[in-house]
Length: 415
Image (tube, rainbow, N blue to C red):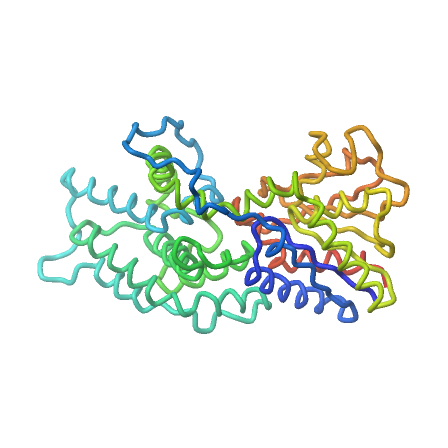
């Protein structure tokens, strides 16, 4: 029986690993039911933590001014989604500011005195949004709906409140439906991930996100399924992005302590691996040995991010574990570290050992932490590109929610 040892990447702890492991089991089970998926969880024992509770982080004592980043010059949908993950209401507030400017310029309201404010009717519809009937598009979509459903009501209520507060009394304008739908979705995701993102980031394929947002837009009476910014709303996202560049720089300083502590598992694991990586590699070796003993068949290493670096290092050692026939790295930096001459077991310029197994490297062009290896190791690495349709950093965490990944792997796994 073929065994696939799933090696996680940086920043992963027990709860997150179990969710990712279940997703891999389900995804591979749909395409290769006979394959056995084996755990390799190293994060708890060998991951990083702030042993002195953040004593090294300086305390910001006064505001030294805003950042001076330049403006964005294009309405990139992925950039807008990246903004909405920081502030789900940013686009809606920019839309409202434009509406108030039209009113201030003497625009006629467009509705008779005594008639219900049209924005109130829209707010009421937003407040009643649900995901009922949004399913059947695959297991990943169904899982996303289940994750978001408990949070959609509060998210819709918050967006409805913002519409009433900021748009009440302003002239009607096109394009609010898609903007409100995106705000509701982004808020629901934020709530599902817990305060300050304390829970595991949702691994969401961009196609599933667009299906949910499209359904919400339809229920609000809009038709913005294919395009991104509709009619009068075009350009709103760009203005919102530009207005947030400098304030975000200031906010990052203000909340540096919390940001640093929250980022330790992700960034700290990488730093710790560079000097304490032997423990991670030993954990992978043990998982491979146990898989060989239990399954009596070929072993595949399926490794994400930092896990791919550790696997490449392990397999390049003089005494690699026996039985590994295929290495699959996903969103990995191993080729990049080789080019930097920063791998543990392989110096830049050295070829992969003859015994190194077949290597498939999966990447998404939007994932800034995913690199390609075919030109780094000519003839030894096969690069496979996928498109999760997600902005970075979510593109880095969404591979295993992307059904195309499993479809591509199915014929490559040894029998």
